[in-house]
Amino acid sequence: MSYQYLEYPKCTTCIKARKWLEKNQIAFESRDITVNNPTKEELKLWHEKSGLTLTKFFNTSGLLYREQNLKEKVKVMTVEEMIEILSTNGMLVKRPILVGDDFILVGFKEDEWKKRLLPPVLKRY
Image (cartoon, rainbow, N blue to C red; front, side):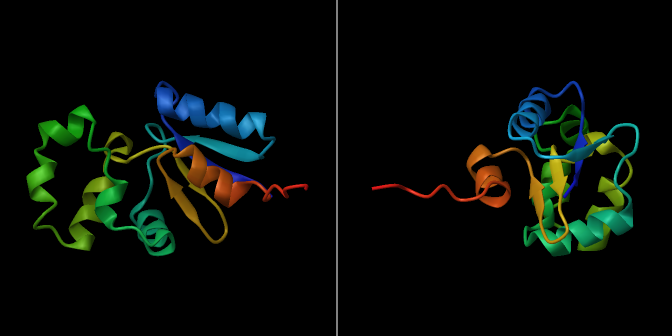
């Protein structure tokens, strides 16, 4: 199985996640989020699949997020408005994102990725 991996190639967290995928021999198709940002349709689907609040899809540490004062604005936005803004610029989207058939991982939390992508290790007594 191959996954879709959305990244900003200069992002240190994305580099770390990419290396982790490669080390664990997990096949993925890379997509530069700044060149080919997510569409409204993709964001809507990923939001539904992820089980996360849509605010978790925002790159809250990004310059663009701060410049647009989105911290306050997202508090009163509808889901549609948030999707519209996220679809305008890949730098607003939290990364990396790993898209599987039945799941979405947003951001790189190694334990979460291990749990989802690697087979459980059986303990031997």
